Length: 310
Image 1 (cartoon, rainbow, N blue to C red):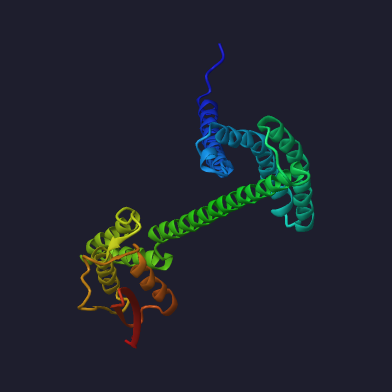
Image 2: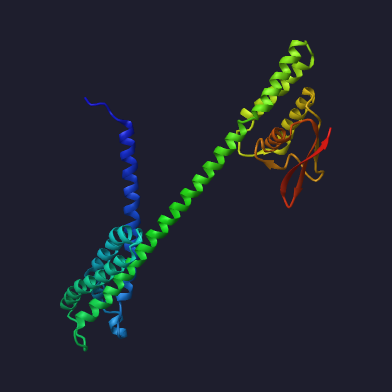
């Protein structure tokens, strides 16, 4: 007995569902078009013809005589001319093929018109009625072909836009996750080195520094898994960072938060303020007094750093 492959079965089921959905869209499109074509084919000349059953039978005859040509033109346009010529920017051959398709539709509809007049028995007073009726229905066939191509182009463009948006969101999410889990190597190295020195001297501040560094690492790795956190959570981590820097003797950092800001109601990306502090330390060092200013302007949070000589 052959083993059952669940992955293959699942993939086959997904393909089957997608085919069903695609077929349903095509059926819905042609049902709408057939309904419209049937209604516009009802053309009584008098009130008696309006209530006559022959009027509606003739419209139905027109439907199955001419709609198949419209379907043929639509699918040739969608699956041949559009993907192999228009999407590849071969516009001149595409125009030539559309004109050729129009000519073929006229020829086929000429025979469809002959069938229509033979079944309905209608008599017209102008010459060559099959050519006129075939020409008019060929125009309808090309119009529905252009509509079908337009729908397909719009759908493809929409899918591409959705894919671009998803790629952009994924890129932003990856950058955010990288920022969450990244602390500046210089900060980690200097913190561990300072803790090691204080442990060797049996300095009581070493335990406080270990606890502060642990809290910062915990926030970076575990407590900021969401895309947004409250400003309060970020400020708590910043305060611990500032305290740790002071215990290391790396210079003072003053935190100045606008009084109009409610840290519980403001949401920001995790590690956004801490990243600014770390980048600033890497660029300017900590041998100077630093002021971190957080303000709110037009519902946007701004972060600024000012330096003064120590």
